Image 1 (cartoon, rainbow, N blue to C red):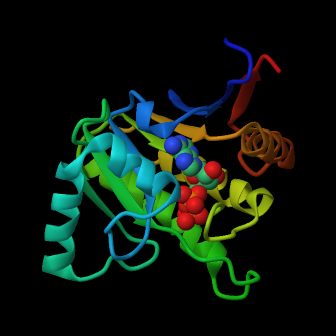
Image 2 (cartoon, rainbow, N blue to C red):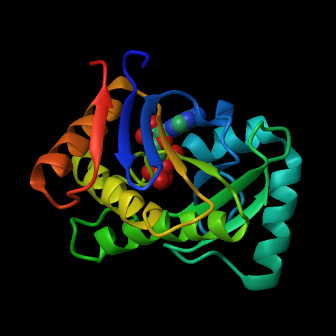
Image 3 (tube, rainbow, N blue to C red):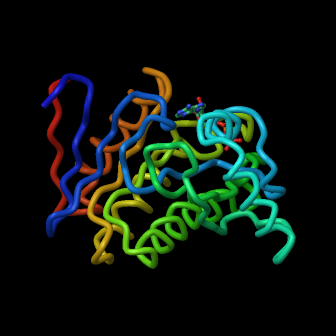
Length: 200
Ligand code: ADP
């Protein structure tokens, strides 16, 4: 396995990969966008996805918002991937960090879960996630990593179609924190059936 990639094996036959990269280049069936509720694009990963995918994504986002209003935090909707390799973009709105007193963990967990359930509904096999809420929304990465990994491991084990979830993390620090969180989850015994491979 290439250095710097951590693979979490989730029986039966599911994989969570942690790697460093630009999610707009991911070759998974869908990539997840850390959107804001207007779905009109923005900075960070949201801006990068709209720039790389082109105007077809925004056009669909406009239609969705026109039909159902702004997307509430923790929900997910899908659009085309436009010019991306990924055929679909799943947009979800993470919580803004507020000191941990406003159900941020539950809301963040729901973002990952809803995104995977939507991918399952679309019959997809692989989904790539960024580190939702840990940029402009200020969620501490150490806390977010545990929530994100737990939610993805737990949900993935319940799905049929989706078998691969990738965390495509933009910088080495974030990858390091997620890798450490995966090791801690393994040693905590919370998910007794998971295993970890890495070349670090
Ligand atoms: P939020 O508003 O949910 O906090 P941000 O886009 O500000 O979302 O940041 C979320 C994470 O996405 C951060 O770790 C940021 O470094 C990362 N990020 C930004 N651009 C990309 C990209 N092209 N690919 C993957 N991750 C990215």
